[in-house]
Length: 380
Image (cartoon, rainbow, N blue to C red; front, side, top):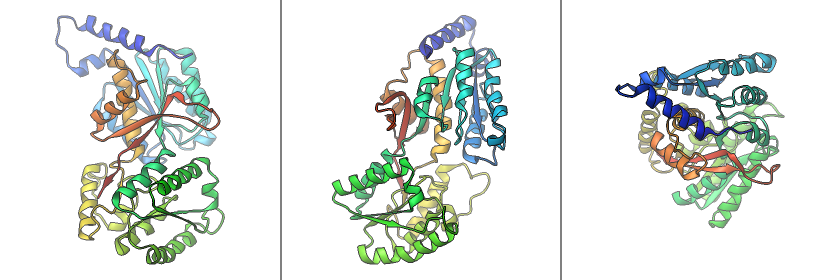
């Protein structure tokens, strides 16, 4: 079922050498005569991060990357979306197809590509179909290691000096396997490191009156908890809207936030800190991180707030394009070697990234071609 990607890459490599023998060609000229990489994302209004990540790769490799978007209402236009993906394989120069979407139902298109064009490298970055089937029918699957983050967050909090970890969540969230597993991992690691573990249930926004009661509860409960446990406390919440309150209270009460549930400089920090970010700088994460760091210093919160240096929803799609290009261009690159993936991520982004094989509970074993990652967080 799986094709020999190394053999494909070697063939393309030899063709490019023969075609360019005796001539010096630019990378763009090689790309024009070489191959295409198809990238499929939701629309801008549906998922801005993934769309803009792909758009940035088009700008970087205009002669290689072809970006298409799924229908706005994918759930009612599934067949159209699947046809869009498979149509990329009609281009004889297409050598990789990457599908990025927080939706299920996309795997049949990649299966069809596998059947009709086995020479094409198929990748997800990520999609939400069954992982076992994805590993069977897709060459390379990429995603965040959501469970491993439980350990990483606890270790980060301990290194920052935390003595207590407070975990805020609610029943419908904890009913989700990945969130429950992350919590268990965070608790286990916290207790192993000698930190006190505190679990607090908030009003459930999915069964009650939305986020309002949850946020009001946090606004009232966080000061009580900090009064009880002190400022050497790290607070983690499982729901993104929580962080407008958590970070705002952290700036007032001086407790720690090692990472948010979705660790990105654009979650809560700009809003709570009142950062004025121009449209031009909206995707300059180094500049945004500098602005957050300066605001944290002014609030006497240096090294007490953290997160990932850029969103996973931007990093993973861009990494997928770079990886596909690397596999095609470099026949000797062994992407099955986790250390190679880690080093390539650092070479590409400048950040430390750790990949592991995904091991879903239903599989009972690691999926060799399903890779999940943790990015080293930064402190502000």
